[in-house]
Length: 231
Image 1 (cartoon, helix red, strand yellow):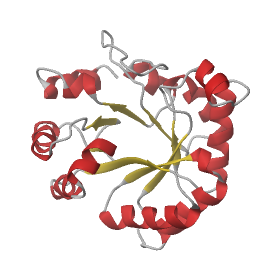
Image 2 (cartoon, one colour):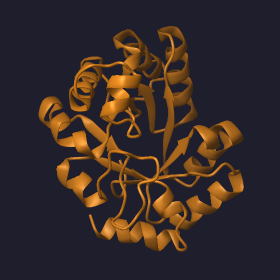
Image 3 (tube, helix red, strand yellow):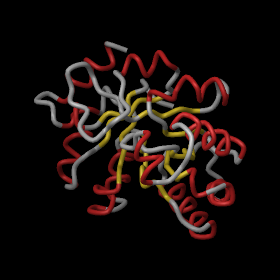
């Protein structure tokens, strides 16, 4: 699907800034992630810009709603031309199946529907004490990944710490897209379950998502190349 496994998160809220980043990285990076802040601020225009540049779009809006609403949102995302988009696995089987139905209605067979398992900002204490889910983080991630796979979902978003377990339980074809990835020497910021890009790929990730270590670098292109060269 792409030149390499690196997905760059466009962590800006300005269309011109996003365009500059895309232009700088286009020859090295094949997929750009458009998240809530950027999409809310500038809308589909950034998706069109990236697609016009012949690059791929990962629309990371983490849809979580009733099945009928989710079906419409998934159809709209596929119609928009995105290559990957996210939903929350904890929305349940009916919701995830409705997302698949929405994509199928467009006739676009190439869109990857990806289910978020447990956010990389959540640790064991938050899961148990605040969200009130019993068991370990790994148990919850595997449960949600297997449920998503059974619903026909293309793959999951999961922290690097759970990649090996997901691969063991869901097989080699199931896609794993991994945020919470930080090059050596980078601050983890609000990510709590992190690994280096090479560790994530060695554990079995298909794609790694990196934002601030590239977007805030003095030389974005060189930062991206360094990450790719160290995989």
